[in-house]
Each structure stands twice: as C-alpha cells, then as structure tokens.
Image 1: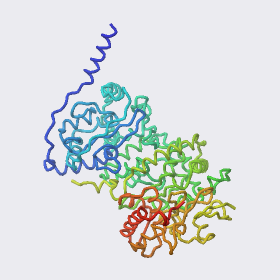
Image 2: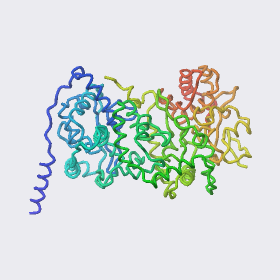
Image 3: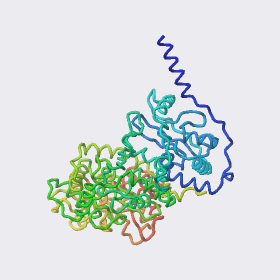
Image 4: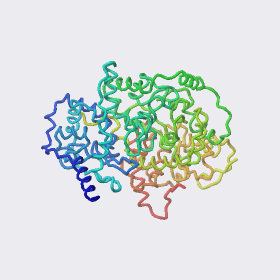
Length: 442
Length: 164
C-alpha cells in the first residue's frame, strides 16, 4: 500500500513537473529584428543586469559559465548568446518568454531559481520581445555551460517544480491607479526586470525571498546587500534625488561609492534612459520611507560630527593605521570621486557585520576603463588579517554609534579568501565589459 | 625605536609607528628609488616589495612592517650589476622622465616572481595602479616581457634580482 502511494506521489510530481519542449527554430538572422526594438532591448538588458551573471570574468559577453555560489551548491550561468548549439540560438521568442515567466528552458527542463524568474514573471510581453531581440543579435559564442555543483537530490530538476508551486507567481503585480505613472513604472522595473530583491531581500531556508522581510537586506558573493527599506543602516537617509545620482554615477557624496556586485549594477544603469532610473529611484525612495524624526536627528548628528576631532581611544593600532593609510583620502573634505567619502557617512561601518568594509580594504576600488571614477588602493598585501581587524574595530567605534562587531577577524579571513578568488579571475582593464557602451551596439 | 628589515639589512628606525614607510626609506635610509608622487596611494611611484608583494609605501605605516622584509629597487641590483628587470627596462629604453619607473619595476618584479610568464593582459591589469604621464607605456609592457624572458634564460650564477 505504501508503495502505491509513493508511486502515485512520484507520478503526480512528474505530472506537475513535466513541461513540453518548444520546437527549435533556425537561428533568426540579426537583420530580421527591428533596430529600435534591439536598442530598447539593450537598455532593458542593462536594467536587468543580465551581463553580471551571464558573463564569466574574462569571458565573452553573455556566454555564461559564471559560478553563482548559493547555500545549496554552485550554479553556473547559461550561455544566452544566439549560438545554435550551446546558447539560445534555436529558441523561439515563445521559448524565451516561457523561460522568463516560468523558469523552463526550450527543451522543457526546469531552471534553478538562481535565474530570478520569480521577478521576471512580471516582465511584459513587449519587454520580453525587446530583450529577445537584443540577445539574438549579439555575437554567438560557442561555450558549453559548466555542470552545476549540487548534491543529490538538489541536482534533480524535478524538485524545482515543487519550489515553484510554493514560491512562484502568487502575487501578480498590478498597477496602482492611486500612484503616479513614474511610481508605477518604478515598481514594474524594481519588482520585475531589475530584480533588486534578489540580493536585497533575505531568503528562507528553501532559498526563496521572504515576503515578510522585503528589502530587509540580503547578500551576494560575500557582500552584504544592505537593507533598502526603513531598516537601512545608511548614516544619512536616502531620498529619491540621492538614489538617482548614485544609481547613475555609482557614488554619492553623502553615501560613498558602489562596490562589489552593486558596482556592476550601477555600471549598467549609467547608460539607460534617465526616465527609467528616475522611476526606480522614486519607487525605492518610498521603500526606504520618509525618515522618522529620530532617524533625521541621528543623521544630523552624523553630519555635524564630520569635522570633529576623534575621541580618545584605546585602540592605538587601529587609530594609527587609519591615520597613515586612510585619513589622507577619507578626511580631507574633498568629496568623492576626487577624495574618499568621510567614513562617518559610509554605510559600511553602521552595517550589521564587517564584511563589506573588509572586502573594500582588501581589494580597493579599481578604476572604470575610460571614465572618471573613484579609486582606492588595495591593502591586501600590506595588512594582515589581525591588523585589518584592529582597523575595523577602531573604525566601528569612531564612525558609528553601533555596538562593536563580533567575529571581525573571521570576517576578514573569509573576505580575504573570497576576494582573492575574485581578484584572480578579475578582468584586465582593457577587456572588462564594465561599460555597457563598449559592448556590441545594435 | 623599531627594527626595519630593508634589502636584507636590519635598520634601527626612530620614528612614530604611523610614519609612512616611504618617508623612512627616503629620509632616514637614503634609499631614494621609491618616489613621492601623490602620497595617497593613487599613482604607484612609491611602490616597494614587502614579503614578495607590491605595496604602496606612502600609505603603509611602519607599524605594519614589524617582522616583514622590505625590498626597494636598490635591493634588486645596481648600475654595475643590474637585475633582469632593470636591464630589461634599460634595453627597452622604457623610461622617459623616469619618475614612475622605479614603482613600475617593483610591481613588475613582484608579478614575475609570482607569475613568471604573464600574458600581456595580465601585465596591463597588474600595472594598472601605476600612472605614467610621459607615455612610454608600450615600452614598459615590452620591458616586462623582456624581463620575464631574461629571468628564464639567465644563467643560474647571475643575480635574479629576487626580492625578499
């Protein structure tokens, strides 16, 4: 009897899990796509930050193979160039749209939700058409996807069907008629293609975003993706104007510089239409919320203290390192990008843990090829983990009103391990696809 | 007072712990190869090697150097017996005003010690923190590749100019 139930359960699972293949097409010739549509697709691909996951460091644009570490194992991104054998060259627009909406590839296999179809489900037909037009007019690259590194049973794609039952597409994104068109446009982009919550919303044990903790802070590649709601740890509250400037330029004088995975996001957003960035900022400003009187008071205190002399400290080592290695840029009253942000304004030191600050001290900020951009030297070679930990302990006391971090030295060691891997595979400056304008234009 | 190990020798240094290494090298030890460019770690002219890695000496306070081995360009070779990296830069005539070159050579040396046969992309990426406004960039790239070749073909008895 038990065996029968098990068989039924398996049959039911397969019935739910099975998706038909969609007929292969001959790769459409690039000339068959409307140029205006391709151009719009380029902007949408930038808003969707597709290149970050679908381009391996040092690899060809959109050819996949980039490892995405997850708590469950490592997922390798797929090749989304129009290569007929290893890319999406034989995918019809309908197959592409199904992948975006339902997370199923052309052959009918379930895709892991590392591909954020829980957001892309909200993308309109029209925008999917433009995304498809742009990707299908890129240079085809023959590159077989790397096999995922997942333990059994997570390597069985049938279980993704169960994940989808639980977490996919329960709440349609309806326009709010009481809001402005700009706000609604922002909601459409943020919740859909831009998939901000994929990093900035914490995930549950099954790896799905926790709806009850929307934008409450998550992580990406051993970087904190800070809370971008009312719990934001930013010393000075964000508003729409600051968000526009930050998302556009990659830095803001009251907040500092986008680093880590966010640097790629703002790099992509630097070249999309103003209206789209403004819409994202308008919507997100509301997610941050209007600061409470207490929040405003704290922010005013921070701004008032910027030029104050430091309090006496027992952390002599950290203080001396700061004075010699950091203050020459960070305490000169020259705002970014020509000077370093005053660290009292940096979210890194009010953050829940030390890893973003550790990451940036270790690896610095590399210039963006061909642009005026902030830079910072890397200190991985000149400071030991213990010395960086001493520096971080000092900076936490000096530049935030939060209690000391726990486990700072371990955070530094973890950061050194992950950042070293990152730096070893980072791109030489002349071939870095950091600037969307340098990529193949339609 | 602290002991600073530079080019294989111990030096007793009387300076505050937050004094940048560059000042001690130039002002106290008369090792003038490392240059003061920006003082902000943004130009690379002050680069030296610490325990095998390129480090910007203008933003490296003394207290970080306890027990570490510092190598400056003077420690690699001399005019009479230049190290492969120095020979290569001379043979390619890679310097114009030369202000940035000592730093370039030190980072290139550290690169070649860790990666004896770097690709052109790797050399470019590694030297990216160095500014040169005269414009001998192409010669600098050639010199680094020449140095890599010299280091590989050099007779075992000659100096490899290996930093500590």
